[in-house]
Length: 262
Image 1 (cartoon, rainbow, N blue to C red):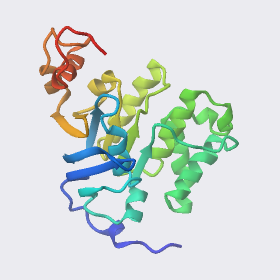
Image 2: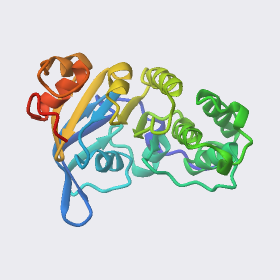
Image 3: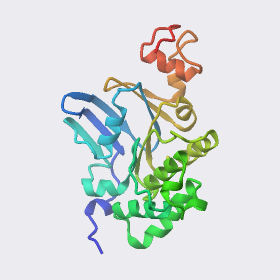
Image 4: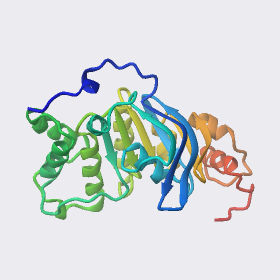
């Protein structure tokens, strides 16, 4: 039996699950991929949008405690210690490693163990997570037999197995078919009632449908934070995009109206 840390039993008194002030995070030795970010996120589903190279993955990795900030402050869950934080965070990176000979159940169990979940709680939590991503019928299949979309769903299952207070998902719908993406949006909306969910994605439809809040990020800086409707209102019919929210995205990133250039 492990000792319980004070942070785990202390009352929740923080205003924001995620709070960054002047946050700077490097990608490699030289590039400052997150450059002076001020950001506050509470419970709900937040979409993180931005062009390639904007610094989204670096930001997600810093929030997951994988990368250390170069400067500024980053306060998660009111300042809980790193070990306690990692028990209360769910994280799906763009590319996650797994043992191909593990079954789906074994892999999610292993991740639950790494998160130091109570041994008695793991079997039920694993079964629930696998069911929530629609893989109950494949729970005893080896990972190497799964399609790419199924592997991605296992990645979501391991991220939510500990019922995290902060859930960080980097391109979670890559490889999912349209029906699976609809179910994913429903799932994250459920999770957002009790957790702070941050989804980094290139799929604007996922943000428009699932998210209550949008964070637009470019060149390591915050460009916009607000509702999907407010983002859509920033554009005009002349801006690049097939939908109002895409045109708002283009307008705020200063893409020239009507150019269609890459």
